[in-house]
Image 1 (tube, rainbow, N blue to C red):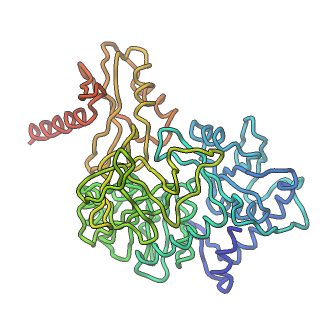
Image 2 (image 1 turned 90 degrees about the vertical axis):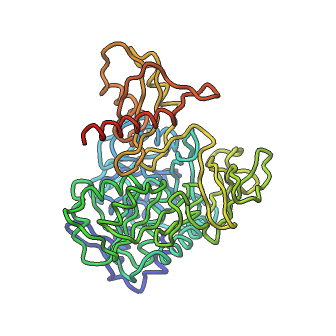
Image 3 (image 1 turned 45 degrees about the vertical axis):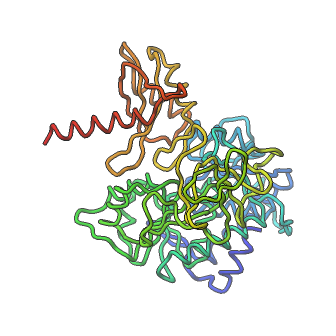
Length: 486
């Protein structure tokens, strides 16, 4: 069970505070009591034949309690996104839970039970519950992996995977942190396997997980203990922009960046006002952490860092043969302790082949230990650390009434974080906010869109939109405008 590894670590420190929000705290003892209480409250769910339950809950603490209570009953869980927009609908359609537990009113095809706080309808209650021993290969968590392919995939972890992943994550966190006891602020969604697991690893490494939201982000700066921030480049940019005036770096703060490369300009701002202790992790939902670049190591900004000891990375040529030269890039493949076993309900995959995972990144390996990511082998594009399909976004643009042609591309903002731009050929008035809404209907997590008008869409030698040239055009225009202002 998921609880086993936590109970083994914390059973002798039941009074220790492991969760905190702006108004209260919870000890491990309280957490365990709440889990047992909710497991009884939901006892009839397994009896009803539910193998996978979706959890939609605004309270992060209650969300975790429900996940572990379901696990105690031997029922796997999938965390569903907030709201009922396109991301929620795509999660439900892909994962197909048997039941949804929600603290909000849900109207859909999946049976649902509404709850308040940690109170559930009495019809689900059982006085006695059997905490069955799970087999090592029994599924305990399900999620969606959308960062390595144009098509989102249903992914899972079993008990063996979970214990192995947590062990390695604890090892990674212990190597990065500088204090025995510290506060943890995690910006990654709990719906992600990585977001769920790294929260638990931080707790088991001596951390206290702090719950917060965008409206009380300033709470993060009123810290009394050493802290660890776990976030994407876009989240880091938001955090740095919210720093109080004249902030100075505090090296009791550890920054762990996940989900994308750290732009040099954002790294500079972070070092100047937040902390110099910055670690950038390269990995995927399918692999876990693969390489780590600690800024203090003095590696080049374009380096993805040193490959962790328990993972193996190779670059291969078009014939799937390993490339030995460190200066030659090829398609990356990954294997190791934290590699997922595959996608759920997909028996054949071009991503998992002969014990290797192919993430779609083009890269090279220097001296058999330092990894460099050069480009992508597909049409995924990164905005703020999240990946998006350029083909799907291009389709929305081209289908919009009044637009003759168009394409999506990336332009770095003032901090170097890539943001979405769309170039269009259009000779009539259109509603830009409606175009943006249609794109956000597909990707709710896409940052704010900027639209530019062009006379033609430049093409590369293969006849595809030249997105690199479009980016250069915008940056050149930005430089010229800045020069005119001065």
